[in-house]
Picture 1 (tube, helix red, strand yellow):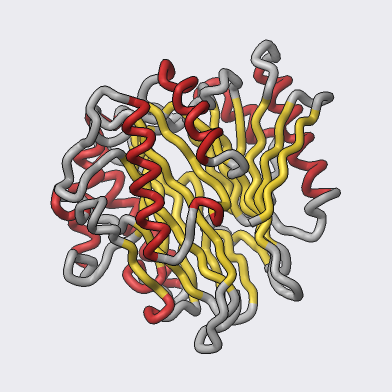
Picture 2 (cartoon, rainbow, N blue to C red):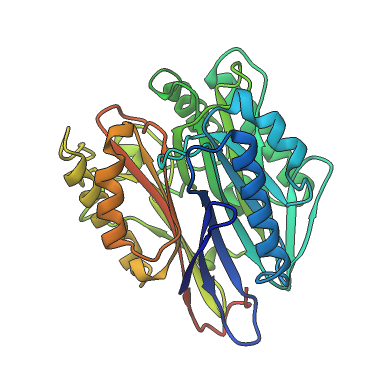
Length: 382
């Protein structure tokens, strides 16, 4: 993985970028842009961030397409409308969530930009990125209207199933990754889990078959009635032989041990590369117990150990990471975690945001993705 970092003094922003480049093949870029001047107003920070992003796309990454972009806001109720007026609505799948950047600024973004893909967004909001034998489907900021998190999750998953069926896909065969952002997670996470378990069971997704890589984390929608927001990623043209589920049983328990249904990690093998998706990972042991209760430093290190164990099963290391999202429950832990992860992940595009984990005793969670060169004549290239 190639890494670069650029500080834009004029716009008070910093770009951290990873690039996976193979000769005569699709290039993949992961970009995180953050502000650096906490004294600026939201309008100023938004304007600077979007200008930096647009300049990057029009110059250094002019041959790419935006497939997915996520905006992290500090106060969605007061910021989302202004963002929607100014952002590029043709930027593929767009996710907007209140997860305040913990560097003290009001807005940040992550974007995935590959070359060589035909990208379009259908009327139902599903973004299609097509190349060769594969069609990748991305969806951001999906919500449903219902009285509680359980019913909202049920509606979200069933509506998503209908979208996939229209494209001759199935949740159980084609969905690779989900994100669930849960308002007041200590209260509403149980409803999400119940609905997801029931929907997955109806699709024969069980501990005897497989689940789907996922992050379930605290996050707030601009609308206070929306307890759950969902982002998704699916692939058409993929075969089950290309998919490897990651367990790292020496470090981590199976998720169904404590009643939830997601995969710890998933490796997708293509003819020329592998994508390794690591779900939201916390300080847990192989019995499902929280490790190092109350100690953010040791929890942060245990999280890295768990991530490394999962990556190792896919023949990858931390050096192969394209990005990392770091979620904290307590803003006071930011300085400790930043210092640690600047040491262990010095070049990886990463962002630290305020987002409580699904168990109150987990102070930190990480999700990430790695990309590594592969050579397999059985599978089609990415």
